[in-house]
Length: 208
Length: 208
Length: 208
Image 1: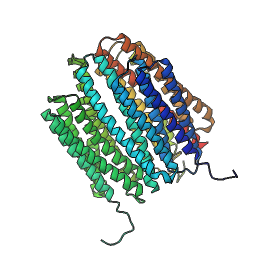
Image 2 (image 1 turned 90 degrees about the vertical axis):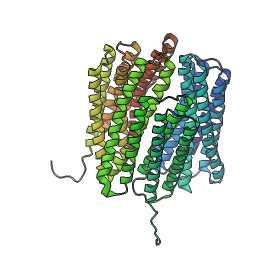
Image 3 (image 1 turned 45 degrees about the horizontal axis):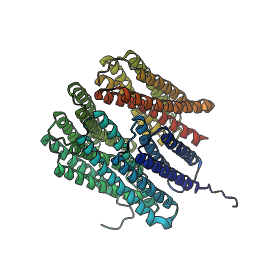
């Protein structure tokens, strides 16, 4: 191993990967909750555990960032990337928890569709984030960024369609208030995934 | 033209102007849609075209920023200004599109009033942003910033009044849910214009 | 006093303290409004006065920041801390004003509870912010940050519980729309307090 004066800058990549993996666990759990129409204390507590673990990783990452002199890329990009990944997980937890608060326990086709796109987008984030540490992965990283952007557009269209359907068909205003928020949160997850790849893209451009 | 080692830093001003002009096109189209009570596929697609063009300008600007060593002012201010201008256009598109989703096709006096203020504010942004590249324009730039701040306050008052009227008069909760959001978005455009001039003001202070 | 080439960097601490004190005044007034169920023009105007004073302090702080070469800690942290403190006050004003717009003039137990937690959190902010200028206060500052984080978690639980109660018991959708927003704003104040201490914590880590 030897002695090195250089800080172990690769730590950041390890921590980014941990964040991305926790995001995948959250998205996968959310997809299952959605398909089962099951947002009870048990499954929402599982989601909260994931969210807490992610908080700890983000906190650890910020601490190291503030103490590290040499970083693999711009300090601000590291800070923003860690925050953006954490925001994705927070928002998935928020939907899951809100479904429990609203006592919605029947599957909804639109939300199942959203959850599928969210899971795809979050899994693609892993490729985008992993690629940052390996120049040979440049093309795969770029492709992943493009895919996450594409899925965000899919989500926009889905949100518009689901909102139009909701207001056209529903007669119960309380039902509308609940689902309008849930769909907005679901679309927000895809926006937050896009924020992550915007940061990745900006790091790539600077390294070019 | 001769050979120069200096990057063409004025490119940034050209791109800021393009963004500001697209914002004016969006605001003008929105004012027309609002007066006509016409948020159909055709006019909303026109709005989306403007929003797409603005995305490309913003993307181009970020690329150049990441590749340029010497910038006319703080990199972060350039980044924030480009994002803030883009946010204005995005939000105008969001209202326009949401009106279509909600199938609202009758003019609403309050929204017409909002659209007028938005158009004024966005046109004033052009002066504020153009002034950045020309020290002789300093007073005009400052005045434009003050005017955009003033219009944001007008918007706040308008939002409060329209919200009070909405909750006092409406009996249909679904109508309330829709318009509450639309008015909030309209006021948000004016907030976002204020964000733009805050960045402009902070650039001016640093150059003083 | 003598002549000094050094800018009076302690000005920043004086201004942060002013902001924190105005936040306490806002939180205390909000707690009183809430207990009295009195959100009329008179008390909301008092709140607006506080918010205006806070705007001026924030503006003054930004101006000095842009003109000061040597700062007691990272420029960006100073900027973010000033913005974050201002956001706390803005959000308290927003709730107060929205209560007036919605013409709600009866006390609500949940909001009284929120106001109590908000007042606690904002008063704890004062300790956190004051501690920044005095290394001997390090432990008290850290403890204050932990307490604000804890109160944010209390607020989350309170928001979930109040939302669940609201949707379970209320039959009037318009009532739901109003209070859903008010509770969300109240919880947002606690989030914004947490943002303040996150910035404080990050400054502490860098100084360690």
